[in-house]
Length: 326
Image 1: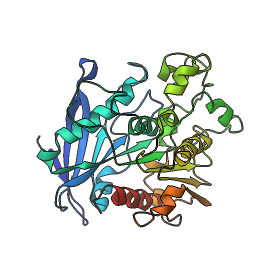
Image 2 (image 1 turned 30 degrees about the vertical axis):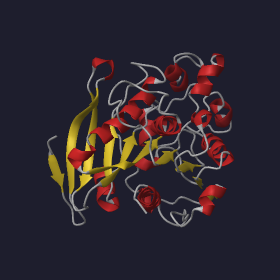
Image 3 (image 1 turned 45 degrees about the vertical axis):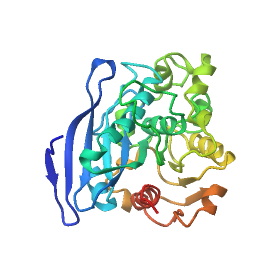
């Protein structure tokens, strides 16, 4: 694996391994970019970024500033492409995410990565895929690629991901203004009812969500929640008009009910797609509401959410706490 470039700034160098083939699903090379902090001694924990775009648009370049995140966190970051809904339907993109986790473990020794500490970080549709991948069992959404390695993850950051596709229209009923942000621009600023065959949700599962209750259930990450699920940090803007924050409450409630370590943070003034805002640390979030499961409150020796810190530091603190050995 060749290092294509080294990015430098005053804080820390980052090595970049671009255009790595992690999968050949559908006989097409599926690519990943790897960002490695060079001043950290290995093995280095890893977080995999899963982009948004309504399951239909976007690619591994639709990201926050991942080199900067790798520099500041000391974590390796892998950004992946996955199959989109114009090519395949659910559950193929979830299979891609789990394949990427196994691929990371398959190359861990080459890049001095810590294969025992792998996390997922998703935005919007990517958060949905990350949650499904993290909560499902090894045998669910599996593929033959890198099958000798585990697809289990140790932590998940879920940014404004959809969950219950059959309920999303109800959740949107009182929201009429589309957020003005990078991901909203990608999905076109035009939302069809989820039950419309050409909506993002129905295209994703391959049929109208109004006529497919079983498929909607299987596409809901809350369906896979179990005791012993990995820790979750769920972030959502209360002004989000694309994916209302009730979608995140649905997942948080399922995690809390099963006594998992979960934290839900709601931001009064934030809309959709805020991970891709380059000024996120300086943005006015409005009132910040932190909801923690009893299990999270009991394990605060490892990490406790401070609602007064900016979102980049919140994400960094959570991932560093859960992806580093005590």
